[in-house]
Length: 122
Image (cartoon, rainbow, N blue to C red):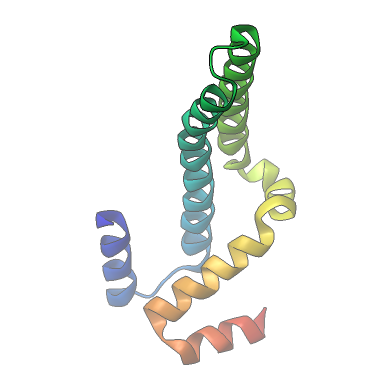
C-alpha cells in the first residue's frame, strides 16, 4: 500500500506520462499474478492432502511436484512478459485487464472527467 500511496502522490503533483503509467500497470499486473499463483500453490497442495489423506502418497507427491513446476513456469512467463518484445502476447493475455486498470488509475488520480476523455481518445 505504501507503493500505491507514493504513486498516487507523484501522479497528483506531476503531469503523468502515459508510457510510464502503462509500464507501471503492466508490471503491477504481472507481479500480482505471480504472487497470487505462488500463494495459491500451497492451498491447493493442502486441499489435495485433506481430500486424499494418507491413502495414496504417490499421488500427493506427484501433485505437489506439478504445483511447484507450475509455479516456477508461471513466474518465468510473468518475467518474460515484462519485456517489451513480448508486448503482443501480453496484450492478448492481459489486454482487457490492463485497459481496465489504466482506466481505474486515471479515474482515481485525475478524476472522472479526464478518464472519459482518455477512453474516448483511444
